[in-house]
Image (cartoon, rainbow, N blue to C red):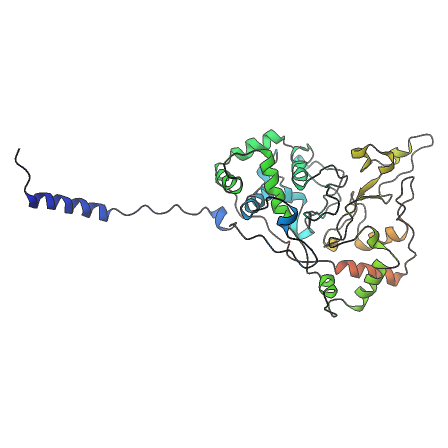
Length: 364
């Protein structure tokens, strides 16, 4: 066979090159809408009034894990009927607590306790979570409501199946954990990482304490003196997060039992005693942070105290007498002016840096 003329070969090469050049390059894949509005963000700095960085106190918190946890925290697909997320009971605008006396879960079921706040949850003095302290880590706390039949109504295996069924989540688990494996411990760790960033600080009190003399008005300054003086609130509400993270009996929920009945039956909810088995812990519940306390009425573990002023008056009365009343809880004999000032000071503990809204879209 005769070799092709050089001109023909050159023409063929030129045509091939022209065809390749005219073929448009493949467009890069579009960024999903859910990622556009929930990008990886740097970890927030510690707010004024909180003394340590998140990474020092909650191991393995990374921006990628926080982004994943934010989706999971707000995603109702983690519940049995697709209606309840972590945020259903831990509302950002309510200081990551709620405005109802008790929580509502799947199918409209009512619990027996109000959701405690998770603000500054990464900074406990005594590291246990829930009103009764049954969880020993922030991640354990995140797993609890998932399998509670009155809350999210799932099993841990059901959580894994639900998240695995959403292909869009796989990439973000890989970015957060190094591979696409989805298991409940990773789900909980990511949610805990997001919760660890919900830190409140730079309140009027923080600014005044840092040297701004005009940050508090005269009534609030009187309330400060009452808080740390006559009322001795700082016996239990202490430190940067204004809590000792321990357990105290205020008598909330106490009803005098009939003669001859077990005295402990006076508490429908035994509180810490259900965890420890110790009679001395009957009716004791964890001290919540006072940061942003004005945002989360009603108060106490059962939401039975309607207003912040009512809560102050409960302490002023010395709680509700019962066999296990904490020794720190005694009548305060505050004047009306002092009660009003104490309420004003508590309102000055509202901070910033923690607010958020649910993502507009989620991985699909």
